Amino acid sequence: MKAKILFVEDERDLSLIVCDTLREQGYEVVAAFDGIDGLAKYKTGGADLVVADVMMPRLDGFAMAREIRRSSSSVPIIFLTAKSTIDDVEEGFDIGANDYLKKPFELRELLVRVKALLRNKVNGRLENVVYEVGEYRFDVTNQLLIFNGREKVISNIEARILEKLATNIGRTVDASELMIAVWGRDEVSNRNSLHGYIHKLRRTFRHDPGISIINQRGFGYMLTTRTR
Image 1 (cartoon, one colour):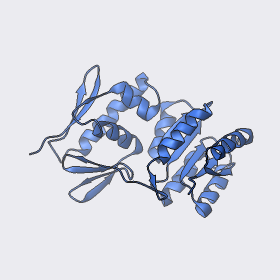
Image 2 (cartoon, helix red, strand yellow):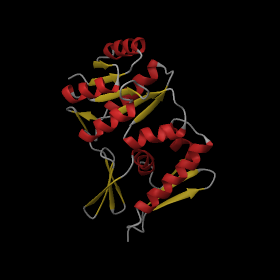
Image 3 (cartoon, one colour):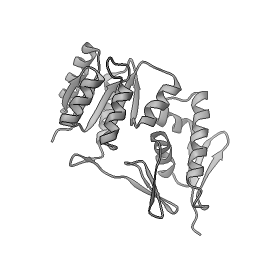
Image 4 (tube, helix red, strand yellow):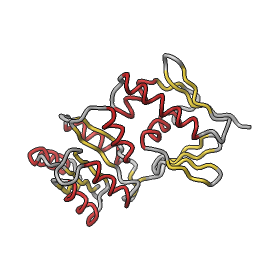
């Protein structure tokens, strides 16, 4: 089965170029030209992945994504935007975006990101990726931390940071690598945000004193665990 992509973009020339390129790569593509149109097409036909512009008439990409997230917590969403402030990027990830691509962009870069988000699809569903972190279970796909049977939903940004740390338990992950994975670039404002999200994750893990996120000054962060 072909993966189905919903592409929501009000610039019709860009939409035509991108949709044709995606079809050439073997994807089924449905085009929409504003947020209301995109939401209606998602509700009636679904999608394996949504690519959406942020600034659109009638209903913007953020508002559309919030509505999509009400019915699906797992469908991957890529935002396209000409905006460049860290606040905009954080808002997109907190809504539940999986990736963020700044305009203008290379078609090849979009294709790489689409392929990366779809590679964990199994029979039309996202394959759950779960890590054991001390006494917690970290469900990456659903952005859940589970402790003693209790589930806590964490933000998309926290999940992306934690996934990087969880795949490198006991090893330092460079701060620049974390920022590029989450925000696409290494900037001073991103460093401050990263530190804030690390602090939130430490508080989230407070029920297991064996878990630590160590700040290796000048290098990055390391997730460590120890058994009681």
